[in-house]
Image 1: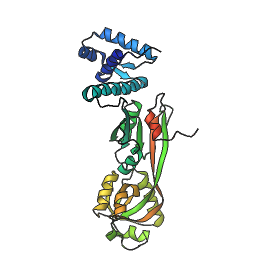
Image 2: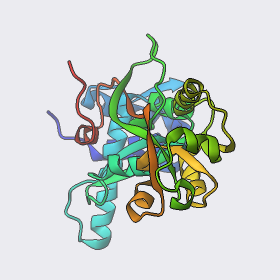
Image 3: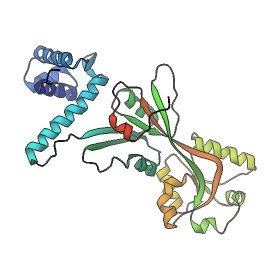
Length: 292
C-alpha cells in the first residue's frame, strides 16, 4: 500500500474545516480545480469517498469524518511536537458524546470515568434535546448519545440502542422533612413533592402509583432537569421523586435521606449509536458489544 501523502491530507483537512472547496482554495492560495484534483487523488489512495456534495457545500461522509479525526490528531501532534518537544508521539483520539440535558450528571461521569484524564483521549461532551442529539449522530458529529428516553426505531434509522444501567427511583428529602420512619402513603399525603415533568417515564409511573394508592398530593415543583430537582431537595423545598444516583453525594454525607424506594419505578440509562462501518474505537472501551 502506498504511503499516505501528508500534503494531500493537509489539503483535505483545510477543506473539511472550511466546508467548501472555494473557501479552502482561497485560504490555500490554490485554484479550486487544482485543489479538487488533489482531493480526488487522496480519495483514490484511500479507496473511499471523503465528501458528498449538497448544493454548494461539501459534507463529510462517514469515511471522511474518520479521516478528519485522524488528520486533526496528526496535525495537532505535529504542532505540539514542534512547540514543546515533549509529546510522546501518540495521537490523541476524540470521543464525541451527546447527553440529554436532563440526564443525571453523576451517571454521565460514571460512564466516562475510564477515559477521563487519559493523555491519549479527548472527550467532547455536548448536552441538548433528544432530537438535536440524534441529528448529531446522523450527521456524524456525535459518536454516542446518552439518554433515558427510548428513541423510535424505523427502517430509515440505523440506531443501535444499548441498555447501560437501570436505577431505582426513591422518595428523597432532608432528615427534617422525612422524620422517623413514616409510611410511604403518609409522607406522600403530608409533604409537598418535587416531581419530574409529565412527559417523563418516571412521572408516568409515579402517577400510576398515586392512582393505585388513591392519593392526592401537593406538588411543590415540576422540573425537567434532574440537577434542579437535586438542588430543590437540598433546599428542603419538598420530597423529591428521583433516582438515588442523582444525589449520591448528599446521601453519602447524610444531607439527604431516602425515605422509600418506589417499587416498580426505574430510570433506564441508554447509549444510542449508529450502525456505522467505522465506529469510534473508544466506544468499545465503554459499551459492551450488543448480543448476537
